[in-house]
Image 1 (tube, one colour):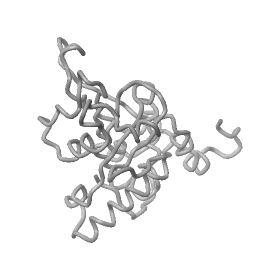
Image 2 (cartoon, helix red, strand yellow):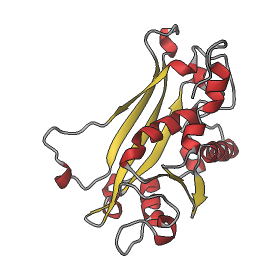
Image 3 (cartoon, one colour):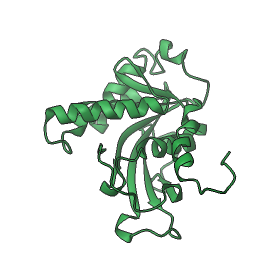
Length: 223
């Protein structure tokens, strides 16, 4: 994950950023045959009609996994993915007896489709960092996927930031900042994993700071 505290001037109005959500699969792969989590990619880009230097038009990327919470399509059986964070999430939030949500967590999450969105990674371009964009963009992506799942989860560790941080202390601070950002959009810590009820109104409220700062003056306030 790549976030930064520095804040250069933004290349364009962030209200003109569009999210493209993509899931690639083989055309002949049907749901009944696919028990593995689905990889989803979110690309954030400045709308083509907005003035913006071309080299900065791509804002960032968000990587997600969507997993089923059903006995017959058990996330715990998906260790072939080979990613420790996904395995940790599965072992933490799911009941090993039946592969469903842990009863304690299940009682905290609103009803919805038996699926979970796992936030794997978020990376913003250098020119877009430091302006509080990551939270609203993640919230926008999760809000779009909310009708298809019950909750979101993310496993944070300084190990995730070692590639972009110069030393161990910097990586730990980056993980703390990321946790604070997730908590501002509605995530909370549960057994070493950050989880989010996808019906949490905080996902909608996450956009308000950018709307208030960038909405053109003289226009009606956004709803």
